[in-house]
Image 1 (spheres, rainbow, N blue to C red):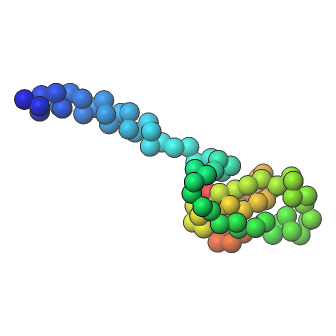
Image 2: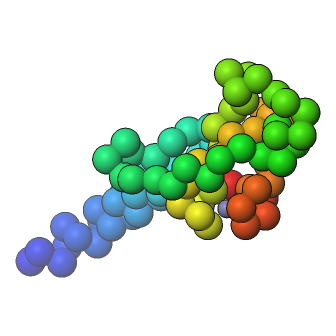
Image 3: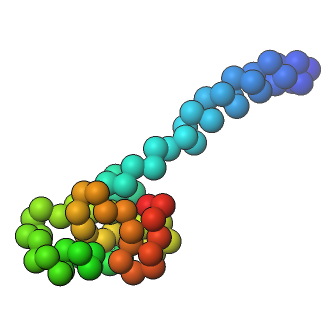
Length: 85
Ligand SMILES: [Zn+2]
């Protein structure tokens, strides 16, 4: 008896869960503040050019589980070289 109802709802559930899972991989968005992260420091370019730290942008590295700071256009993690955020 319960199978009838489930068969029809299954499609709806799949649709909605897929939307939830498609989390945008924004480079500046930080995961929940409850989760501790590593401070990966600043990019080499920032150190070399003496960039004012206030003008740097935080980048999330999923490989290091941490945040590093660099220019807005920089994408490479200074610690592991990961460019996928
Ligand atoms: Zn990294």
